[in-house]
Image (spheres, helix red, strand yellow):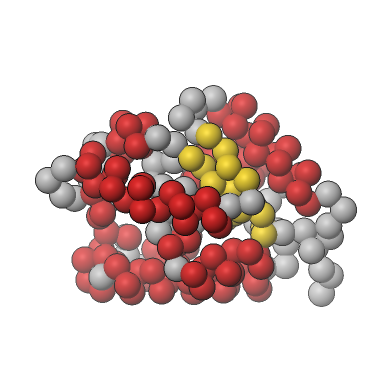
Length: 180
């Protein structure tokens, strides 16, 4: 089976941007789980968090991963930052494809997201410290889930796309997507 290319990492690590950019040369559609959930729910991530809470949203992330088993072609999946926190999701990711952790330092993340009001987990008194705390908690989980780690502090998109393509193609060489 030629697997999906799964991008994980903390918010602001570039999963959506890099996913969109790498999907073109790979000739694969991008599925951004946050956008997938927003489309299914008819509400933004912030609205879903406010109305139903984080646990509900995390279940919708799991639902999205399960839906990817129905895809007939490999996809680039840009997962929400919290998706790998559930063991069930990490198990699904291992079955679905090649997982790449987009790793950035907390200060890089803060600079990228500090003005974004659409990040419900950062609507607090000290978002910089919240980022540090969450990254300390999440980093070991991301590393455990990853097949490959890509450093993204130095945002050279061309270099990152090339490295990501090379790692993915090396991993999937000789694999074929099952015919239905």
